Figure 1 (spheres, helix red, strand yellow):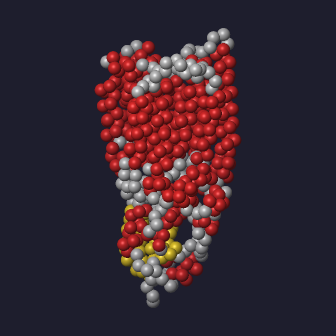
Figure 2 (cartoon, rainbow, N blue to C red):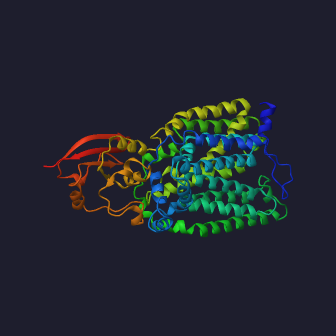
Figure 3 (tube, rainbow, N blue to C red):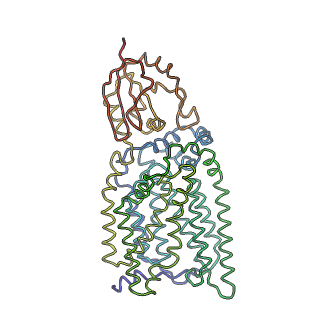
Length: 513
């Protein structure tokens, strides 16, 4: 291994209470490159993928007045309430185009990339931090949710920053109150944005416990002699528990709301083979998982071949103490709960990807200046097809824009529309043309009037009476070919049918007999 590689592997010293112990995090460009790459990845064709049904739900929520939004959150989607409150002024000030609504997620993922790199620098080395931040930035699902008008990128950002602050709190030999205060603030914000962020606390409990049990100087602040270490460990444990209490108190509205509205999660499928598929898709593909695993395994093997000192320098105990629980416990706990009530969706644990990136980054740093970047390029190439796919018009599952464009081309004055399935009702809010210009003939109350994400519908006989006065109706279903109960018994002629992945759009002419 070259002398340059050894320099990259050299572990950064811990900071003293006054911060003057000579810690160096590498040149500034190493700090700036990961968030810059993440920004570039997030902005790359940000308007390419159409809004999908969940983004439509965001727009349905924030298009109403603020008092109406607050009333809605008492009935539904309290788990996303903080995100809607953040997005409401942005949409009302700058509009609801893809750039406006998705840019906050891009910025959040850039912050997460910077925090990943900072954590890698602090725990291992500047080179490992750089590699970890870049790995995180090129993972396909990171890009996917960086271009998504939902809360998941912000959740990942707050979780990653919180983990970095916890590392600083454990590693400082001075007062850790400030680090833990920041940690509590980030964890509270994370949980307010999505209640499943609270599962990260379980992972951090393991990390704190391992830090308190360490008997060497890997966590310097806990290595004081003659009973000082015990006092430091007790101080850390009590300080962290106090932070957890603050998190639970601050996030309690979202936690209580999420529990009381759990019936709205009835759309989530029970555990099955698809659960493991979703876990693999969180990384990108099985090939990408294998590549990441190979980098980690090779990194450990190469370090071990160079002796115990090199192994401890390249893979300090703090790294697995932080990343292994972070990678394992949130998905394991969510899967366990899902045996009682299905709740597992891979995007709910998107915030675990930074932990994987940290392990891969450590492995890349071990491989050196040639093999390390080469392996990073391989990871990028393995994810390229998925990167392109998520930027296609249907890259976010639903091509609502395509539906609207078909309607713009085929629409005639007086056309009506019928929606089937709750998700299809979110489509109207996505774009200011197409569906929004059609008369929703079955609608009684709008979503805003109903204080829900969807409105109410009229009885079938009333809808059929309304249909008697129109000549054409569009029928849209987000799950399959629509079978309209409203059209039963009526004389109809199908003029056209379009399928855009899972979305079916059918146009009928109503014939008078």
